[in-house]
Length: 283
Image (cartoon, rainbow, N blue to C red):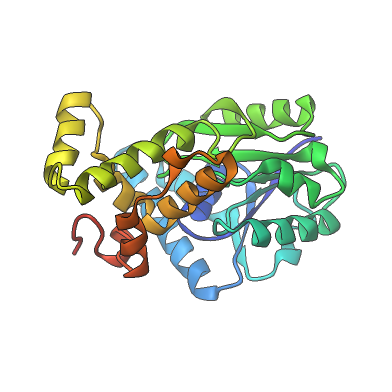
């Protein structure tokens, strides 16, 4: 099957980045979100991002305009009925994702792959909500999507090798590097990353170091591009907490217990960059 039309469900930070890279790579993209303001923000973000590529000489103005011309936004999920490939990128809620996958299964052609950008939720469970579990897989992009080259491909219990092969080839077309992970909580990326971030938050809570000290030690001592607390702010502390809860519940090991300080900050609405305040303060 030739893939030309891509349906991206969810116009948040990840969804608009995913829509951008597909549109840049020559695909017709339908970006769906029930909230009209989210679609407006997404288009503005994509235009700004493509503009930066033009300023840096990495993209011609004509190619930018062509990419924007291939992008359509809509509030109705029905618009992806004729899509050749789906990427779901809504908020990290297992029940909401399962409900959406059931709807997408009814809506799209039976041979269409339904992928999820989830960072931790079971692909097997999402596949079980459909009549095509062999065509359900995880396609976990990294943030910011237009700049990060890794895509974590997750094989569910019933995902076919053919579906994984097609998704891997699609990643190559996007200029991304695909790495396969099994369907365990957190997959590879967040199974390793989130406990490190959680431990950094414990170190802060216990007075081992200030946010600046913790981040600087990891940057200068471990050669990380940004410290774990800055990274947590960038990801969103609510997202970090959601992933730690998935790890804790899914693996049943107390070492994945979310730090109480993380819970407290999320309860206070201090979510990082998106709220203007997290472990650091943002203008």
